[in-house]
Length: 221
Image: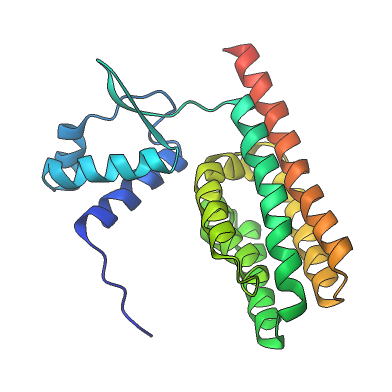
């Protein structure tokens, strides 16, 4: 297995991203470069570079006279991000499904087993982050649509907080395993139309659950 070399900035990006995604850094909370540099035992330069990358991912925003803050959770943003995901991911699946190999399906099943085990163990951060993205990406891996894949990758980063919220707070932990299994079975059957339709429904259903929760939180706030 190849060893992946990560720059100091990449490590800082991952550390700050994880703090935002798991709620250690709350939405709207200022991100003080000096404090983060001290906490992560680095200079301010990789922190600044990391915050700029996280801004591109939609997790950080820069405001005049305020500096960097963790972006606010927004019901309106959920609509746009998840509806775009539903359209673009269905496109990727449409182009990929007829070219998926037995090895691809075996790897997708292995990822699904890991995902289900992580959920069953209550490991919601792992389950809703890396494994969930890798499972979906495996089903799209033969699409050969690099521009669409790049857009989907960015949307997935922007939606990861919401996906985790869906699993932990909006009932996704009960529905996601069965839905992933059904999606995989439709792909195996080679039914592109049904698989793409189901994928859209899977993503839009998560959007509706998350939006309902966010609107309740906004009403309380």
